[in-house]
Length: 376
Image 1 (cartoon, helix red, strand yellow):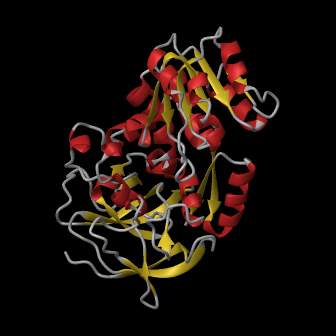
Image 2 (spheres, helix red, strand yellow):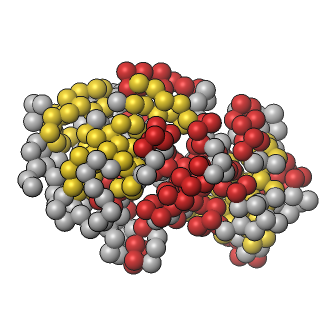
């Protein structure tokens, strides 16, 4: 079946700092390995806000962001390989990957050799675009393979994860990125043992998911670090055994060592992108400790590390993208964790009508809400 151009609407960023404007767009093209999805809900991730702010130089504007979509399949390309997918299926959308490089073939699609062009350039890897404004102006789309800040969107098949629980679509968008990034880093990347100590810096949706996953993994000592007391109190409910607020306890290195008998933490998950945290990573870690960088740092920031201590104390600092997860495998696992009561993400999600997007963004920035989701 051929593709008939679809007129829909999207939250378009016409240029950096111009805000999200609700505008009509036209989807002109869908390839055989792509899927047309009607978006019902879309999570708002910090990365989308960075995009509106011009923080992804490869992106050409106007652009459509959004990479935590949840909706319904309306058309399948003829070459889609996943035979479990059907029209009218409820789905969660996640990140894109090529499927054929060394990383993808060995189970680490988040480390795909083409990750940047497939996810952050807002277009297909061959630099073609499928969306335009009504006047014919090209709009960058397929951000993270999906650009889910749209009522209808054409996505790569590798972004699509079937959801057998349509009644939960309103709280599941964050499984595609933020929750997957935080939760996945625990079992897929760090693999802590119960006797280890895990510190999580930044208690937004990524950090909260990491706290929940650490508790689920049986980790006995989990330290949550954030500047907001309200988030710290929530983290205690989700599994943090100790907490630190740098506003009231500014010497965080000293505080970490006081909680670990002077040794430092075995594992650290850095969710803030803060250069202040980066500059102290070696001091936070125990001998043989590992720091996972999952937050979005300022572009071009140089990491300052004491290489002598890194060597002699056997410390590791590494990046982790999307929790080292295979979305089609790990997202269903998170759904099961949630339904079994071990992953209470519903307690940190709030849904807004798309008309209240500005309020949602304000609530995110103020810390009033952890995971904001808007409904079309």
